Image 1 (cartoon, helix red, strand yellow):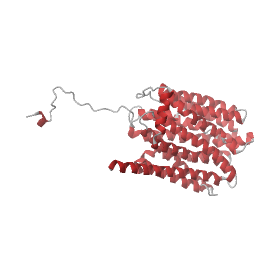
Image 2 (cartoon, helix red, strand yellow; image 1 turned 90 degrees about the vertical axis):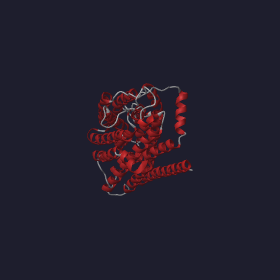
Image 3 (spheres, rainbow, N blue to C red; image 1 turned 180 degrees about the horizontal axis):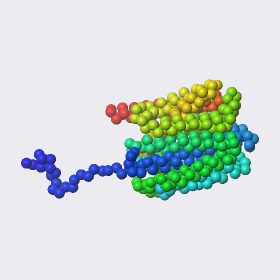
Image 4 (cartoon, helix red, strand yellow; image 1 turned 180 degrees about the vertical axis):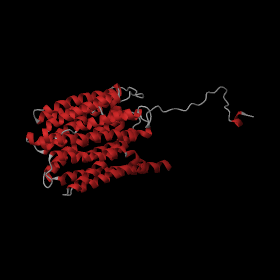
Length: 422
């Protein structure tokens, strides 16, 4: 009988085929839980520090005798510093490693966080916040690049969703804690407490995060970096995702920068501690971010973005009501929609980029935090000019931008499919 008829190899002594085993982490596998907890805590520290003054803006305005638009610079300076430095920090992570850069960034950021309570005036406070934001720039892009390299593709959206969930917990706990502490002891003690919490998160992060196994050092040559960035910016899909992240964050930054001012005024007149507790709605963001993978599985990426944008718009409209329960429901919808949209867009960037993932993620984070700075500043100016309705108008225009870009992406995808089948 011939070898062909028996199924035997026609090559004598041929080595048997060995299946390729993916050594990257997956849910339930070794190191996955430690990695998830470590990056969750890094996300907590990042957002707690980055937005530590946001719930305290009315108190900062009162101490320094400035308007909302001026006090909002304590938020805009931090997010702006992050936006400016995220790309250079991502380049350093390509050369020296994700874990090294994340550790150094957290160390500098928490050190500055312990100095912030002693700022003698608004100018010094804004300067310290800018430095803190620049230091934190080493976290977001490096974290998503670490996940893209160390986690299996099917688990990537879920893993990034957990990191984003840490962002939401950090943003929530920072604002809630500062609200109640500031009511008793003032805003300086409140931001000092956040600094101490961030120190604990930073230490735990460094102890828990597994050493990278799939990182390959890249080049620090400017020409290589410029070529990589140019390649990402010439990709239409990546550019659409960058714009979507910026627009979602414009809504979020504007709403949460101004909401404290609105709730201290009539007809609400809430005390600082209660206003800080309003940020418990961030728990909704924790859930929506961590379940973004399932949402994409059901609706597809563009369907998930439509759902997130629609939910955010509905929340903005509800927040116009003069009833506190309806305002809170509006904040719940805004928060859930924002975090779902952010998790979907940021994970899509990591999947789309086939090289220079840190730079691709850095460009997304840069656009995202530019949106935060713009939202904080423009939202405050709009509030000063037209009240809460002005801030909501800015948010609705940003959501309209998200929907428009997603529609354009849908049309581009269909056009490519028609060309492929022609």
